[in-house]
Image (cartoon, rainbow, N blue to C red; front, side):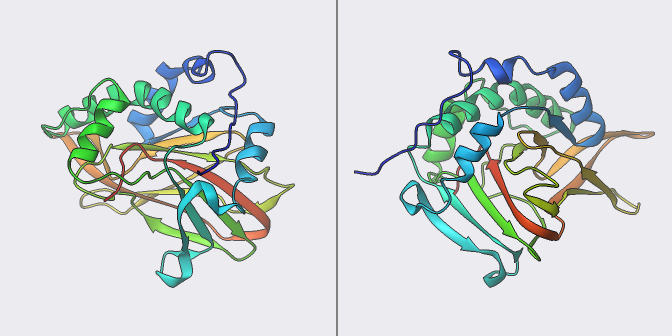
Length: 246
């Protein structure tokens, strides 16, 4: 039987840390920039505990060496079900707040798809379509590694936002390795955003596209994300994706 790590949240109510975030400000930043920082989402102890899972393959379904696929340099592992407790609690708690943004974005872009209030109901939709492999992942980089600009789509059913949590401490554990987001705007040059994160901070961001209000109405912009080159040390990141994969 597979052993699953028990990583406790800092409060008896597992969603307290998520619910206590300033969601009106986060939502406004998502609308204007396509990304927003969730400060202090995890404690340093929680970050270290999650990063320490990486060497043990028992909690993961697969390992990807990025250079073999042209994704960049570095590697990552996808968690298997059941997820570690902390991640299993974070995923629906974050989804509950981002779901309203996702529905509002789709409405603005003229997309008919709507997302249910509960994450379990959305996962049921994914699983019924054959997307039943978990997508939360743990990424590991060392000096010289980087992650090319990309989108995490995985199948027909895609939740429009995802979250990445920095588990390492910049300046102590690693240098370089900034989270980068690019936005391709119609008939305009692309815009780049570098997101400064501290250990335990998360960034919520658009997976594929988002609506932008222009002078002639709302239009879609296409987004990609990646990580710049690690200059020294080691960097670990937890990726929380809300749709599952085929």
